[in-house]
Image 1 (cartoon, one colour):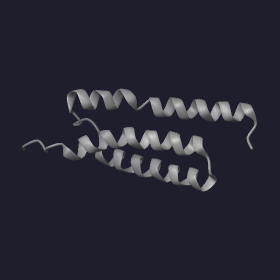
Image 2 (spheres, rainbow, N blue to C red):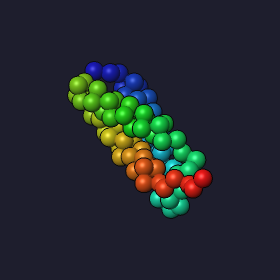
Image 3 (cartoon, helix red, strand yellow):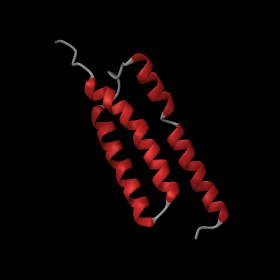
Length: 90
């Protein structure tokens, strides 16, 4: 079991990195504009976050599972909008 200060640092890191996606999700939902967002970045990011969640499950670590589950949900909203984006005409 981790020392209390380690849990605090890990929890704070999880909250900050997860909450950092909220402004992008809100903007994407409000405007529907994803032209400046990289599809590959979000595909790789969501895949990585999903794997971190699986890793957390292997460790039975609820903070890792929850933080990455929420981050995956937020990132998936942006990814969904990006995948639905219509290509601009040439």
